[in-house]
Image (cartoon, rainbow, N blue to C red; front, side, top):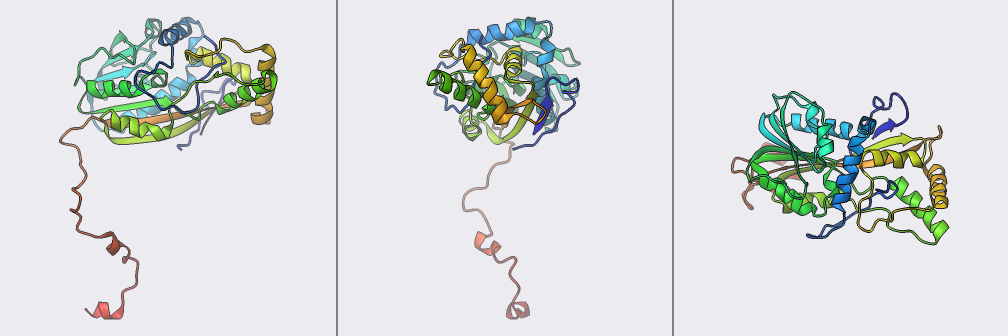
Length: 338
């Protein structure tokens, strides 16, 4: 698990990991997407990202995206090939390819729903073309890219299966998609604190949170989109904050505030104070800080090609599993004489 102390001057260095609008309304839980279902206000999300990019201190809130982008770039390096043309879907400030060289990616198309975010991108040695585009409507021809990457943007799409299908279509045969998105167990501390406080103060809780995709669904989504040779793994990233209000302020700075259509605009002051107390009581650390956990889902999928390894035909095995059970058995004297 990665641990970050958000308000410490060294918070960007204190990293460790283990695999496994309204700033107070965050998405969490699990969702099973239905094609055409409109959960999120995409125009609101574009305004949130544009607002975040215009802030003078916008770089202070990039710590999570930078770390996940670095870990995604490591997975690109694990693929032993050079990619002539790559696409970064929802790449924003270039959090992934700033960790790559032109020996790995020769040319890059960087997309984001916000033009202001693209203007704040980090320059690197890779020749980059910026395109303002929605993750749900990719403006590229089929069989165009050798590599597609995406980090922490697909969890805001209304139709994730369709978005993954479009990514598969713009890939060339034997092209690879490497992505990361926020998972269903993210921010459970904040979610539980808000629900308990609102139930106690107001007699029930409203849907301040929106659904994330569960890791158990991700493999099926990739398979249905047409990918094969799938890999899915999980990282838990834990960031430490002084309190609940700093958690929500940073989420707003990251442009990760809720944009669900059914979001509630405001919470009562008494409810927020009660949520802060519940958060500290249930999850607080000995030093007075509180943790916020982000579950990051990493995925790798390949577009089918005839050169790829394929499973053997059913019934073609020459050894029975029953024979394998005899490997560790001692050899009898009669058998040895034979």
